[in-house]
Length: 217
Image 1 (cartoon, rainbow, N blue to C red):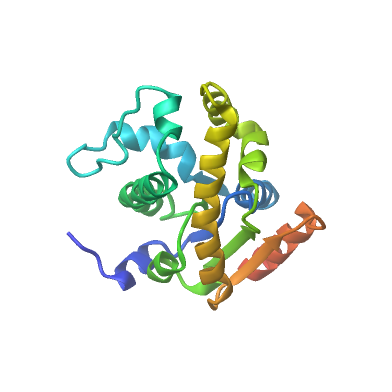
Image 2: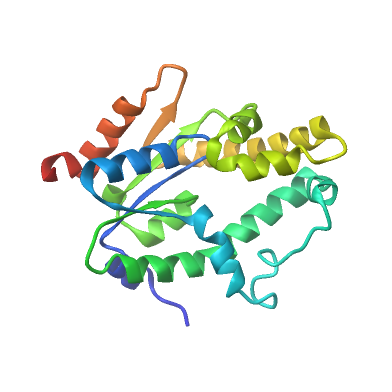
């Protein structure tokens, strides 16, 4: 069954999307906003294992692809790795949308996610979407340094050639982020770029004012 965009938007009218590129601050800002305004955060990365359990290899092959070890996982070409990440996100999206519809009927939900501009246009009005981005260079170090990515850090450090694995991963993230950043900056959506001078407080203030949360608090 295919739902028209206007139907999806209606059922997601209580969902606010905080999306963007890796290391742009999505998770940090989502959680700070939720704490300030007593909101529910839905992090799609945290839901992946549950969605994987109810997925079907025939319909969600990327989500069910098995790698024998870290060397095989990071031994792919940048193009193979990129395509797999894109397919994973696309396949999980159906599960995500159904979860959001269920969770947001009587409450506001903040969705920490990885939407493209094209997807954003289908799911919500611009007033409920903010893109947080970061210049795509050497993202892997920032990614691995995060406390909630400890499992990924341990996994990449288990490869026989850690530097090579990091180089492949970084090149993949950069390839994905460069196009996405360009699309975002040329869109009509609000986007905030994380820099060395960015602060959590300033970014949260901008987002909550844009979403209208400041008036509701």
